[in-house]
Length: 174
Image (cartoon, rainbow, N blue to C red; front, side, top):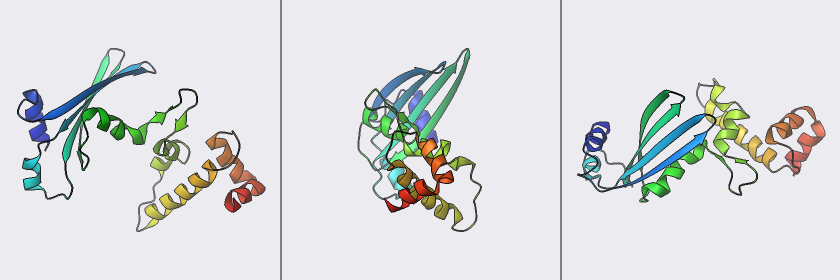
């Protein structure tokens, strides 16, 4: 798949129907340009790999500029969705995003919460069913803390639950 995409990129995707969308984000002293390309004609891939429901191949080229340094990365995805590049780009980014849908107050996505608050990526559980079990427990804790009343931050509510038995009991009985 990577060879096909590299060949198609070299000739500007002239041999295959695609949709493309480019976004440019500038924040925290860096500029990131992402070009999402959706390849719709994937009969060649279906012939080699019988993945059920396969509809598109998605190519995300990102260039990150920090000062004078630039880093380039190409990521490939397969999908069962038949959407254009403008619609698929945000779907691919969503698990990593810190979203602000109203423009006034940030709402953190699940992956960011799990990584930054629960330090999920640092967990070293690797044997048997432990990783899946611990992830389930973390998600239950996340849902209980998220539904707690008040305007305190998620991190603060988690700390209070760890040190205040009454607050913890109110989470479990709500």
